[in-house]
Image 1 (cartoon, rainbow over the protein chains, first blue to last red):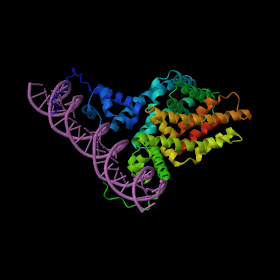
Image 2 (image 1 turned 60 degrees about the horizontal axis):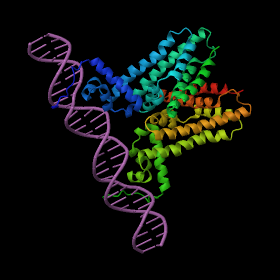
Image 3 (image 1 turned 45 degrees about the vertical axis):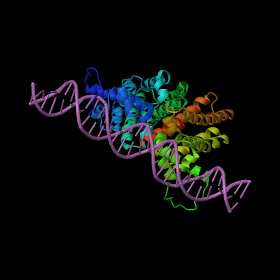
Image 4 (image 1 turned 90 degrees about the vertical axis):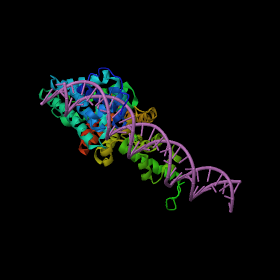
Length: 208
Length: 208
DNA sequence: TGACTAACAAACCGCCTGGTCGGTATTCTA
DNA sequence: TAGAATACCGACCAGGCGGTTTGTTAGTCA
């Protein structure tokens, strides 16, 4: 039926790469506009493919978003939080360091569009149980890593034994997400650094 | 053109009441589905009116949302935060009391659907400057009230003078919104109370 | 009490968008 | 190397939804 086949180069047919380009483009669109606001046409254009390519790799818009969660978002958490924490000599210091880095060098995208994980969780948790479970699993995964860090800090005498690790880890994540959210509302990097400064006050109070 | 005019009672024509019913229905829809997810048809059904009624009172979907922000959301903040704080004998204690009440008796809707203010701010701030300004103004309004409470606490010797009131107030709001968000993701009231417990630890550390 | 206007009612429009489907080109396999 | 399977193309479709328009009814005021 399509009588005017578009001229395109040697095409470099590479399914895995195509799939990845689609996922990464979808991630950016979701980050900016949310899941419901993401337009497949935009994703396709950014990924340099078409409906046919998309629906060959994914069953639906929702499945595409699930792939984004299970790859890009999960990997990012692992890279920025899990890996540094699990190999840390001084876990609490490392935790503080990660957050300090967040407050200062954080990319402009976080101020402009917020935390991709939190955005999706806030938008989709009440609307779709599939989203909620995946997102909440990542939060628990993340929290567990902080809990482990605090517990190891206790063993090493760097964290007060009276600290409730699960509550403190939960609160740390909540406060960080809250700070990012306030900065996004204000569209001001200064808000993020002011807010995280106070989070650091809290975290330092866990030390002994 | 409409040849089958619907039978309805004496209609109790009352423009102000109709407008209010539309706004309140819109608030509930936005709370559940976000602004982009709100369907006018749903609002109309809940409010017991039709397109004609809606577009008589509001110019567009967006203007309706602005009315929701400027009335329902603003009023709620004023009622639960501003009023108790401004008349408080012991401002820090009052602040702590408000948050304690939040952690325990909080309505089921907050766990299920989150904070209406934060939901809208996270969804719309990056997408529409009109939304962002209105929502951010409410946040500043709210923050100012907490700042004033902390400052009065200092005067009365209840808050340590070394506390940075603006940062502390900002962080308090951020952390609270974060806690609500975590509870919403987990769909668990226990998460909210655990998280706010730790926020209370922080707030008590401001006292002297 | 009769014209004028505000306050609705609801059919209708047109665009947007997720998803489908028939077709084609490339790669794999027997 | 032929045929099948995979990867991808893009026109098309149908439903949903915000917004418009035309028509009707209830107040209002001279």
